[in-house]
Length: 417
View 1 (tube, helix red, strand yellow):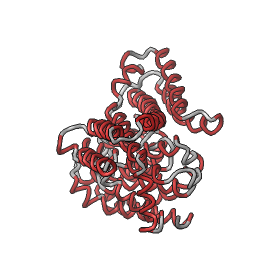
View 2: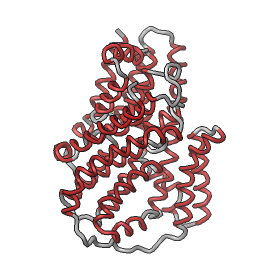
View 3: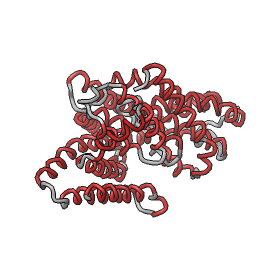
View 4: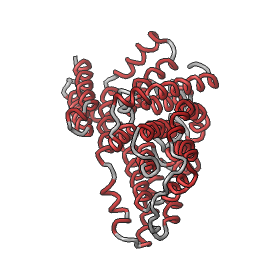
């Protein structure tokens, strides 16, 4: 009975998260409530209180690593944005004309999202795009391509998406193998939509793109950019070379950036304490809540039971992950990743097994099929007022084609699992 009640509570909470725009309540609130209620249900189910609390402590220790990593990374990126570190990129794209915008912007988005993260990169690239393309269908189509590129770019990097970070921190993947194994499929998943839409977008882009107005540079921006990006890129290097946990690596990087920017004395608005007020804490709390809620299902043995029932029914884990990836267009990819990690563990599949790499690709890129399927899509939806129906008609088909082509690429190079 407790298992049925637990699943029911989780489903109700998740429906509230999916319907946050209609309910006009932030999804973080529902995630936190769902987590608390699910664990309270386990405590009241008549089982051993000590075992439940011990399981909660173990899951919380793992989840806290993800939360600390996100806080550190988001603060560094906010600092780089405040220093206008990417303004030269915008001017270079404008000087290159419509071809540079059509091809250069998605390529930059793809690789930047691997170094920063897909949400921040989407915000940054939409801000760069606005002065370059007037409002209208062409700009919206271009932004749809950027959403696809940001999600695909985050899928092959351990710091590019929350889902890959979760797999990486939990030692399901290593940074080097993740890049090598997932990068080809991610490239294909972007190339297909870009080639699909290139003619229609290129035909409508102006051959004379207006240059954005020049702004006085902030002193020492280059130094801050080098240290900030270096701090982000050092995290996987430190983990590989000295075994430093990612959350500790990002805290080291944040501390270094903090010391340097304080010594530069560029003003209150360009210091780390001010950046902390601009970090999207509600998103961090959402991750905390939803991961704790999924952990309650795992502690109850429900995710293991799901895996045991799915495998005989479907037969192929590749097919299961492909469907789960498409499901991430409706259901947030964070709990889907947590569910996969609960369904199979490293005793069944060693680190860097095909299962984990395909999981990273599928849940990372499948959300591009619908505008509500990824954080990058939701951000774009809010910034440019993209409607669900418009995205479904104009971007969804090409995103789906790219996703399936990426899965086919992975299967062609690694075989079925």
